[in-house]
Length: 371
Length: 242
Image 1 (spheres, chains in turn blue, brown):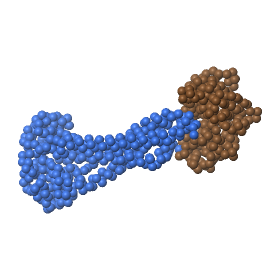
Image 2 (tube, chains in turn brown, purple; image 1 turned 90 degrees about the horizontal axis):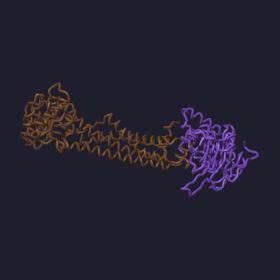
Image 3 (tube, one colour; image 1 turned 180 degrees about the vertical axis):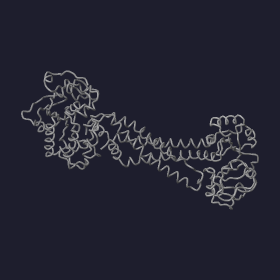
């Protein structure tokens, strides 16, 4: 028999209560995994999308909505001439409902701009000119919309032909409906308007130099804000709210977990009062009693964490498959997130066990003589 | 631990395990006086029975000897050291004292073998040594066939045997037994007492046993009678189980 045997037996004394506490912690940890995984995945997905387009800096005006606010296309002229800017591509990006899909990214790109270059044709062809009434679909978008080359798609009031299916090298790209910017501007009544400028910095620039370029651009254009690609999402108020809500909900779930474990461990100490006194009477040190209670609560946290990570991951994969959001989510269920979540659970266990452990160590060994 | 001179001439010339002078214990801010100035000494190897009516302070005295509680006044020495001033009372309980309780107090979720191993966690021996020693102790109390039984599957006599084996886990020099046969029938009472006395003799331990039963007290080498928190008489037995 080892000390761990004693710890495990302590938890197995009340299997139902231990089980229910485990469920409580695992729900909290599942929430952390799901919410943080989705939120971080969303951010990373955009970062990968930017990388695949070869974009170093994104100029946009992220307000309280998930899509940036439109501004004049002439803004580009004020920054394109900067010596550190190698190329620019103006874009109008929108999140809109298309046919059966409740939310789809529509990415209208400057005709001939570099943001077309990363798209690899899987089937069909690319548009012939800026005003050809056609779209190309990212492969996930085609799957979600159940479209193939030759089908039609309705955007705004226009019906456009699907002339190509492409692989954009990132979830955001593959989940998009891509068309020419002038065509979209005309269809949506946004002539002369854009809401994103993709910018490539001069090759060989360091990260610090790219940041300084952003600062320089921000001094030139009050209409929008330049951010290092991948970080631009953090400038979105809406994204920040979603992210804060994710963390807030996770924190709440963790607090509920702490209270649950603390309640269980306090009950344990209360119920095992005489047992603990006997251990003290037969020579166990108070530190060992505290250690036993802390190990029990930490083990409860560890098991809850593992179950929570598994449940959360399974839940996220199920959500991912829902037709309404299929293709829009690329959760970040990285090993780091799993380890982080289990560490939180163990932390919850240890934190929750501190007070019960302290209470247990205050018991008087002479109580062992009673009863 | 500070070594102090003996309190009496007797202990100056004898191998005293315990020595007390004016030992007091009060509860509820002095409203209850469990011990009201007790003087006694217990020699190494003695079997001392403490008798008296309920509430006379027998168990409180046992608690003081086992460092389970601190006295409110007076002096109490263990082998020339002040017990209330022990830097680590748990180490004293773990290494010097073996407790036997009336209600056995075995841990219900552990087998007989595991219960006996529990005190050994305060020593430096390995898990396999703990296991071997526990088997040996259970064999010595005649329970080698009950190693993996939980307390709920053992009879009262068997439970007390396990508790006795547990009390011997760390090779104590003193056994403190609080009504060890109080929950047993007469047949088991005889067996358990024989076992305790035999083991005490074999392992050269001092035995202090609290009991209501005069028949049990007669087996001791010395009987201390208590009443209202005081020792009212001490009687040496002419023929003892020694």
